[in-house]
Amino acid sequence: MMIEHLQKILVQNGQERWAWPLAESAEPAVKIKTVFSDEKLIPIGISKFGGMPHVPFEFDWPKSKAGIPLSFLAQIHFAEFIPFQWMGWKVPLPEEGLISIF
Image (cartoon, rainbow, N blue to C red; front, side, top):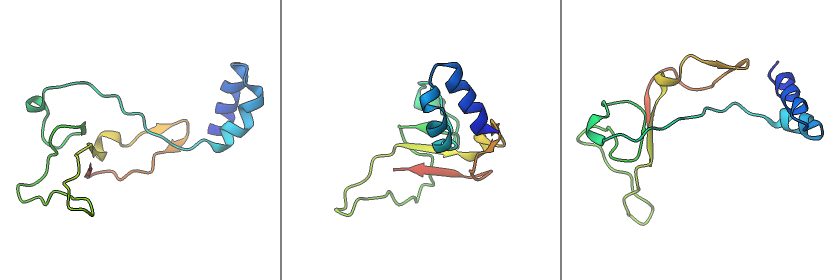
């Protein structure tokens, strides 16, 4: 269903040449919209980019092979994404938990 829908959109927008190759190579994705906020106003445990991660006090900060502390990039709270469907795809994410990305 999803591939046919994507092909139809491409054809409607004058992209007949690319309709099949693009639709066939499409993969599930999640779009994350961000909003700037004061670090102090962000509740513990929700998704965020930058700042300080929400980790336990005894957390061992990850380091590079050279021993340099890694920069915190983001944390994703999976429950904020579930359950949702997009054009027939079930997004393959855990239903709960928090992942911190450094």
